[in-house]
Length: 312
Ligand code: MLT
Image 1 (tube, rainbow, N blue to C red):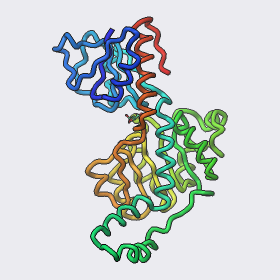
Image 2: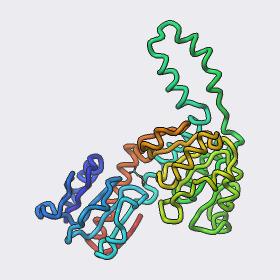
Image 3: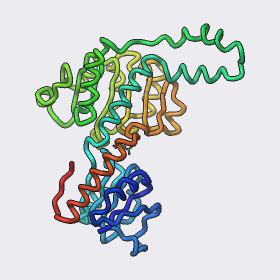
Image 4: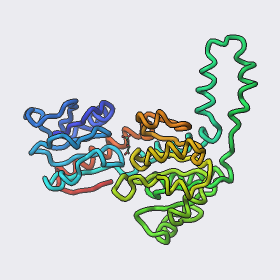
């Protein structure tokens, strides 16, 4: 059996460590179907976009080392009998820590403050005096007592909600895939589960943890910004396309949205006033990469050896 990873050096290291059990693991930067000697039974992939790739006729499974599978042509795989796995929960702690870090950092103007201090480079001995004068523009807000809206109460959303309660926040939740009642019964991690409209209108901070689907694409748009509080901070560690960027640029310009913290920078985001772009670091920790690689390798090994499909 052979498993290939696409551009995933950390994943390949982990897979190699556990590969003594009969898996032939190799990394291929440019996977092609012509190269028969490298024709794998399965592929482990992280963010690499597989939509335009031809899928090898021998390919039996693809494991996404992460939560979202939007970089994988799932329908095409299903037609060809290729099983697609993801690694639910394996990177949840990493993303949770990043959300909470960003929540406090944005509330205390840490990102902007740091960029401003760096801009004082070259001012020599004046720097301490300039800092004392300039710091007034970065007075922050404490998150204690403020309301955090968590959209998506799966592995990541539930962890975020739980720890936000420990930080003395009011936590409200909504999940697009389960009813308000079910969300309330399932999740003890929020003070209240509610409709999306209610969440938008009550939250001081909103964090989103849902997959990108036709229903969730553009869920942040001029209509939904219209019902939010002025100066709301929005945290997007899920997928860039959940946000209508034209409408977000206007909402930031008007001050309706105070800050947009996004793990999905592009040309539009870099031009937005008060956007905080992060280079897709939400799940990027050594621990999470290892967790995802191990879960993916176990899933593939079990499937290739026994035919059992276990997506956990
Ligand atoms: C995910 O979907 O879990 C993330 O995009 C993981 C990653 O950074 O690759």
